[in-house]
Length: 323
Image (cartoon, rainbow, N blue to C red):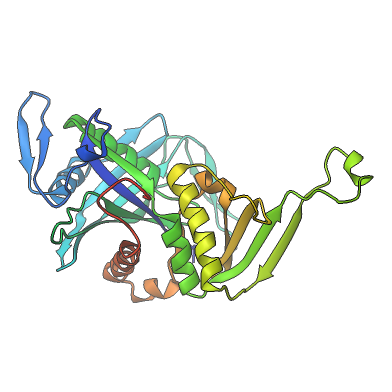
């Protein structure tokens, strides 16, 4: 069975060409959508717009630039409402074309089919859109998107591109951001998945003879399956949070390291998060094989919603900072 995972990100919607964070739209409230002929259509909330989006692309759309086809299975669309959040879920059907190839039986090694460059290898991926409810004085302006991935295949990039194009038609901007890296690390540590922490120092030898060399390498100190003191854990989390929010890695003077690498065990794989390379990080989690044992879409949806709900506890949904 191919490995199944989830790519988790946050999203927001704002008036097009506006730069102020005050222009973010409340996702649980009325949203104005401008039609091409200049009229304004009012939608009840973000889910009403997502519903229209799903119906728009129920037929295959051909993205020739990416050499991929894209559609949404209209019958897969589900919406549910709970006291603290709402969500909708749908299935994206997408695959790439442009390369000829032989479909070969791995056991008999016989070629069973010759695929042409115009034939797309279409797969189905579940997507969940999650939005917390407004509470008291808190108006929610950000939500969470969870995309299923299968082995090395996913639909986050192409789905987000079609969402941006759809919202742009109505004078709106739809944007995604990586979900909080701090939330990701905290969650995995709480689940006991921390495997190794490595402190990296651009080491300079105290021996003057060694310093005649152009480079003397670096020093790494690794701690396998460490139990972290709360104070030290908070120092690490603060560094990752600051780098995530500002895009700049700044380690305070006096620290005995120049970079930090944290390795987690996800299923049978090891995943590494490195402080100086956060811009290349995608928040991807494994989906346990037992979720698919039920052979019911509801089990996968429930797991993806539960994942989004867990991130909700560590995120701020009223501004752009940290998401």
